[in-house]
Length: 262
Image 1: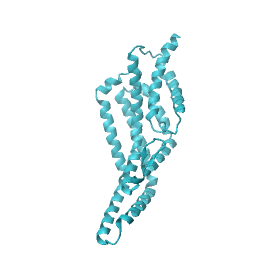
Image 2: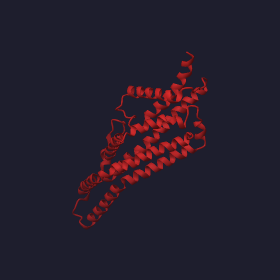
Image 3: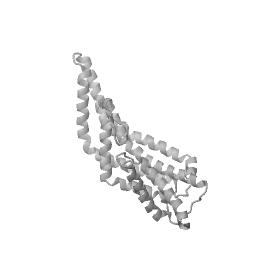
Image 4: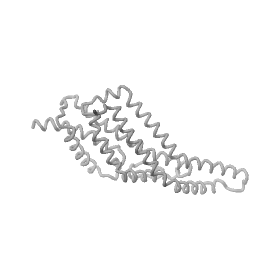
């Protein structure tokens, strides 16, 4: 009973961090994955982490234990949000393309997130997920949450790091960098469709008999889909670069919240 009294609080702290990570991280946060599966997977990984890093750990069993719970949940949410923020680049780029093509008027409800998403953005997001799974990206996410205990132990001073302002600075830089990546990813199609609008404007001035509002929508859809088909082979390399940025951001976040293991 004494061993159980010491081990169970440590295990529950590990379980809190891993569960909060799965709540928001890409792939695992999908509504298509049953909640019972997420809880069972979190418990299995928490047990593995406890046997690897938690043996011998001692945590206080007073009111400060509540603070440790909040700290572990916060660490898991920050790691998951960072990974999701980089994945959201694909949907943001698709939304910018949809605005230019005109598909933004036909947003659909994504059953996995429960939100309204653009057509091209949804297509690119699922394509990115397939590439992410094909390169075993979910294994890297497992590595990130498991080896986060090397950087940020259970008794680490995370709130002190947050008070220094480094976490806020990291999140602002990551958000701005993700938005720049989204613009860069959508730039070829957005620029081509902008030139198409310019051409349609010249056509409306030189040949007023053409109904530009009717033929313009069709032309922009054709141009957008043709360019998307031509640029499709380049998406895999773009996704590889995007995922490299994701893992780099996760490593930087671990360095901000904790100390590099020796």
